[in-house]
Length: 254
Image (cartoon, rainbow, N blue to C red; front, side, top):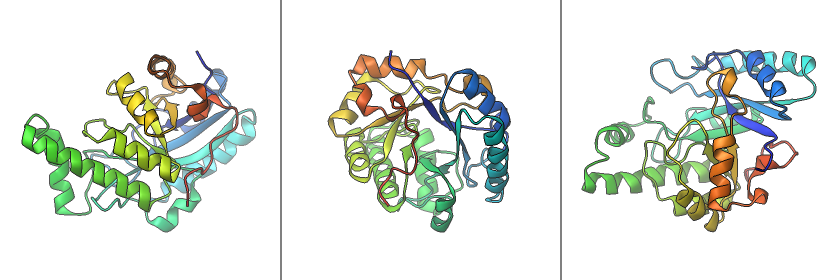
């Protein structure tokens, strides 16, 4: 198994995680990680999943500063898991706010407050219509378009859990990721990823990060399942950013 030096997708109580920033950092230290990102959900997540407003990220940043002094052996990054909220690739954060983050993660989530009625109907379709062949085909195209637009329009460093709850054209998404410098995530909190998906994405030029998507401190750095899956798919360590000791920071093309 190749080593993983950083976990770039973790949540705290500031969105719908169960630990504090300090709890996650302590867990990262205990697992011997060299880097951790605090990436709470954007504000357009429904049912209280996301941050209540953008000012919350200022509080998180202050907590990170305090933890960085206490735990200098691990690099602590301020990130966000933004929501794609429209077919044109819009995110639920103003473009001018993205520069405050060390890392920008983004993904499609079904339970978001949409920017348009059409997008909202598409999200409902993903939840209830995936078993209808004709609708599933349309949704696959629609989901893929939303993700690709987001990748082209925004400085996204990591595309989170691509394909989770949303059927996509993996090859097309992977080609755009390779073009703009965005990593595709191998997410160990979900079981939707297959070795075949990884092979298709890698052959299309994508590179990856393996993240825990931890919503509790005990899962920070828990990436063994993703490592095994990548090895099964024959993905070389050189194609997985967090097998390298340098910390991931703002790699997407701007």
